[in-house]
Length: 309
Image 1 (spheres, one colour):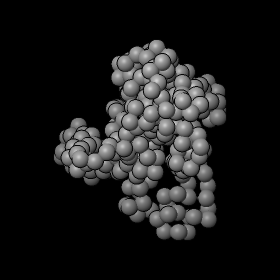
Image 2: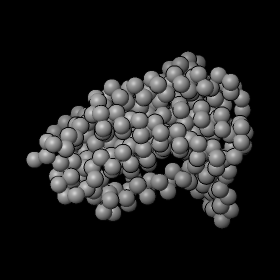
Image 3: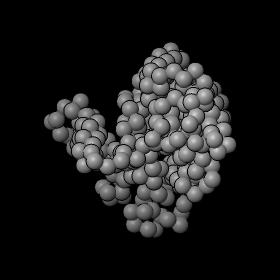
């Protein structure tokens, strides 16, 4: 395997958790709800995956448990933002703090325990003879292929289905959508819960594939990077694929530099993806300063049905 294939393989492993989290955030924010709780949801997904897999050694049961935790926390966030109409930023930050604290408490008994071979590989032997493609894609894990499928499915859902049209209408003008007979609150609940499941799976992928040992705070800010990637991707699932793996490449480059024996302190090398994220945000903000952001127009605005126009 040449260095380019090694870089691509490592970038996929690093970028797939971000891709799950970004897709979940896109689905949530398309419904008009701000999602700043990705860090907490990822941590809860990771610690749940660790505990359940150690107890059951079942990949399927582990994913079901992670999905259940994600859906429950998503429903709580939706209840706060949709039903109680609390400040969505505060609710998201509370979700991050709650997830970080609870995951640290639940993970005390499993800290440092390895989880080898948790995720099955998808063997595609017909790709093996193809240079580069075979090295990268012939033995990818099941969660990576699931993330690829979700990119396509979510893109088609948003842009090619009537339900996706309803979702975009709710995100842009919930009052008009309500007048047209769309069940706005139910849609918001469903999208927040489903998106939270994807963010929980991001934490599970981080633990089961990228770093198969539970460590307190192991997301290391990746939830916040996912929030930035939603903006990079302009709330588009296809763009999210490239954005997530761009960050994965940046993350991998810092690690490769360490392996080459660089005298640069590792702390600075670990900063590379985050510095690049800030720089790209600044550049995009400057370049698109006179253009629409692509965000749903009613993002962050609580909808009160009595205020229909």
